[in-house]
Image (cartoon, rainbow, N blue to C red):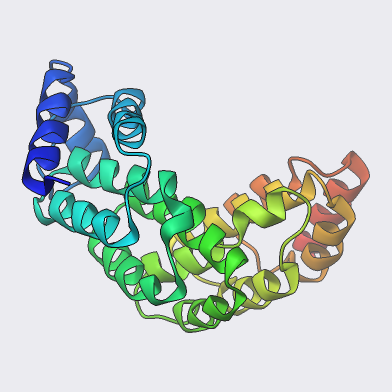
Length: 240
C-alpha cells in the first residue's frame, strides 16, 4: 500500500466535495478548533466507502497507519474519514487498539467524532472481546466528560438490538446521573431511549426510583418509547 498516495487521494476527494459556505457554518455550530473543508457527512462516508472498495484486504497495521496519517492533520473531514475507516474495517481491531481509540477520543473534543468512535468502533470491539470492557470501567469515572460519554455510548449498539450489558450501563449512568454536563445527560437519555424500544420494562424499572435525580433532557429521551402510564409514573416520581 502506498500510504502517502492513499492519504493524498482521500484528501483530494474531500476537497472536490466541498460545499460553499458549509465550512464556516459547521465550524461555528460544532465550536470546533479544527480546520473544516465544508464537506457533507454523506460525501465523507462515500470517500471512506471508496477506500474500502479499493483496498478490501487492508491489514490491521495498514489501517492504523492510514488512520494515524489522516488524523495527524487537524482537519475535521479527514478525521471523520479516519473514524469511518475504523468502522468499515472494525473486524481488524484487537483489544490492544483500545489505547489508540482512547487517544483519538481524547483528541476529538466534539460529539461529531466521539459518538462514531465510541458507538460504532469501540462498542463492537468490546462485544467481540469482552475483556476490553474493563477499560470502559475506567472511562466511566474519567475526568474528561467526553470519555465518560464514550463509556456510555460504547454500550449503545448492543442494547439497541435488545441485548447488551444493561447492568453495566446502569452502574455507569447511576454514578453520573446528577451531572450538569449536557452531553452526559443527553447520552444517558439516548441509551435509555434506544434500550426501551426493545425492553421498555427494564428501562422503566431502572428509571422510576431515579426519576427525581435525572435531568429533564434525560427523562424526555428515556420516556419516548415508554407507555403513557409509565411516563406518567416517572413524571409523578420526579415531582416527588
